[in-house]
Image 1 (cartoon, rainbow, N blue to C red):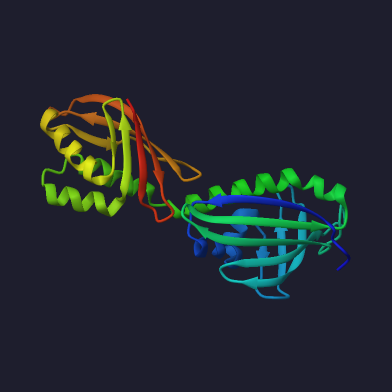
Image 2 (spheres, rainbow, N blue to C red):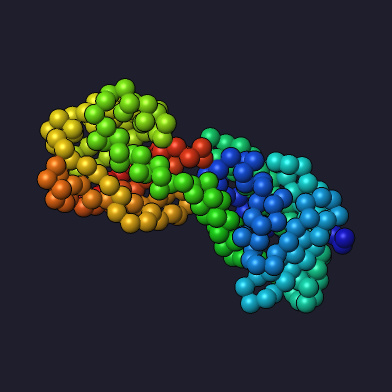
Length: 253
């Protein structure tokens, strides 16, 4: 390969374990879910790489180096030959585990500075799509977690309530709404007990499908009284950790 003195660098944090993120480079179905239908990858040195963009534009190259779950390097260029031939630039992706999930660092090296500059926004966009795609995969069960969150507010048994909260939320979980400003499971549990005492028979339930974006989930809810009449409606905003547990909930009534 010719000298590649011009490079762009891009770093994003993805709310998922490194092993999960890396599988999107080795599992062909997940690779295609990122790039587009028909995209393929053979995850071994010398293996072919094909990206199919919307509109049918194709990029081709081959895997140069792969070290799961840390690094993948592949060549990159356009099948049409324009603006650069297939395999004529090099993409290096490094994954580093961090507290919030995984830090992805991308370096794309080119022979031509102008072509590099044309790819800056493209990678900003593609890595944003990728981070959201991985987050959606990790939190595919968010609706069930939210249903369990709603149910524990009506759970009468303290031990069962404690076990249910520990199963779905981090120890330092934060909850806030117009009536609440609590931090940690040890503070939230007596707050839930107080809600049951002062609002006996009230039940919260998810209303409709959840909405995902970059590890944040919106879930509409209804509050129903013991007479079965809806007393209030609102939206809860959930933040999930890379392990799928709830980190924070903010309620809007």
